[in-house]
Length: 369
Image 1 (cartoon, helix red, strand yellow):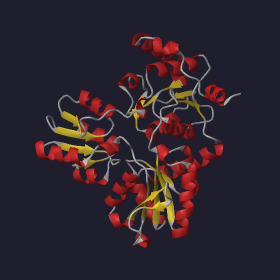
Image 2 (tube, helix red, strand yellow; image 1 turned 90 degrees about the vertical axis):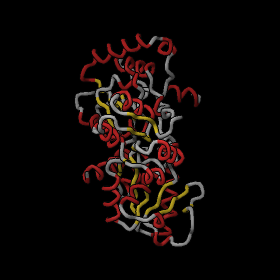
Image 3 (cartoon, helix red, strand yellow; image 1 turned 180 degrees about the vertical axis):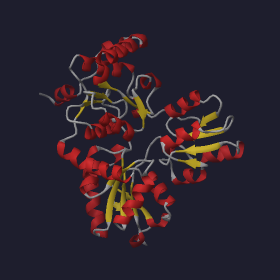
Image 4 (cartoon, one colour; image 1 turned 135 degrees about the vertical axis):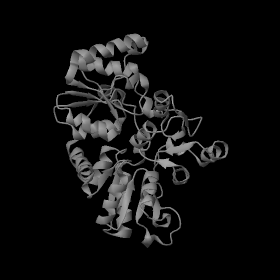
């Protein structure tokens, strides 16, 4: 069997039939399968998904919430996760063995999660522990692969979310003198700074050069080792956007996600997780003006759901995240019809040893929040 044949056997390509159907036909198919399968099927949908997909979600939320809800739903035999690969992996780690997790489009990924792979992280651990000894505890954002979660779990660390990052980072610094924060440097930097750690006590580790970046003086004082990773969407909210609002519309509130760069977060009025952003807008005074710095599908949804508010994106030229938007009606219909025919495609299967160690990292976090 060729490499291509092997790949196609594991991840078959969507048949042209589904691409040729109208939206109405696809919607009818999806609704039919959902009705037929009832409680045996569960569809979690991440906040960043397209409206055409999110309309079918049984629950919406962030990645960890949806993974937990999937685990709590013992009746469902099939979890068709409308999100990206690392989210489906987390759901597979937390769900029971009889439940099958499916990602409608295997191309749905996260560039940030892909910025830290296992071999790079093992190498970084060797480099950093040779320099700092047994003074480091690793933490990983849930926006990471199962293998990175497993690495962190094996080394006594925990996962974090953008909602609980402060709490987990504070806990970690009570365990060891230093933390290694994977894979998003911006969430790590913003969180540590909010906890009172000055920027001079932070350094970025570059897996390409296998070195800490910046001034090599004062390395003994470093407490936060930041992986050189970022969210390509949130890095596109820049200081020139913030300054333009300050100059032209000083009454507009600027609300951003902590995956944005440190200077943007510091210059904004509010910064917080996706759930924080949603709640901030839900409770905003009538007529108030907002510029939001996060994924565009969510921003558009908030605009449509709150006509009594004046909401725009911090970056007026922002587009939805490409990888977050892979799942569409044809892929969802295909995945569901295959489930209904008991021929599931695009199943997510985290190896048992990786799942076990990854679950340790997740459980340490959940025990603290």
